[in-house]
Image (cartoon, rainbow, N blue to C red; front, side, top):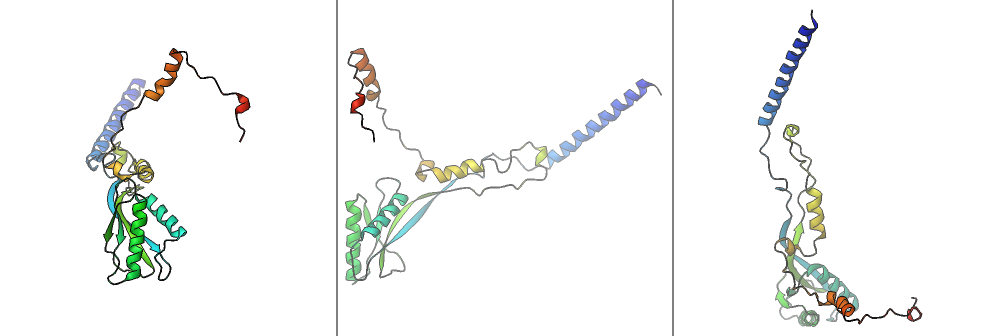
Length: 219
């Protein structure tokens, strides 16, 4: 058997093998699901929510203790992300003098600290406390991770199903004001005067001398 015949036979068999692989890949491609955008199911859900904080009082007292004021400040710092947010104070039950005094004390404290207030009816009133509520937005991370591979994905050159999970999850956890994910804030007007002060002093030969080292305190 000649060498040329063997070479020709191997080339023919290789061609058939390659064509078979190509046909198998086309078959698998036809069975793939429709491609979807990478971040289609990796979106952060910005949803309204209501945070409620119970301010505790001593029996028959309407005085806000220093501890309760600190707890209330911490709640407001974590629930109020922008100015003008109304803080709702639980309505005092009818003919309950102590509860009415507590409502007045809470409302007065909030107004003194710059928070607009409004009364609100909340279920399950408790005699030992009065609640405040804040309606705001919360950023909910997408359902991640997702490693649900399609069995024919290797033929589609599609990105990993978990692609984008870490980016969206981290952003939802780091954003200070979830409303910024809905609409960005308007940038303030630029102020460049302070940047030019050094150049103006240099051009007018009015450079400030450095401080004497003897006058620098070592703390």
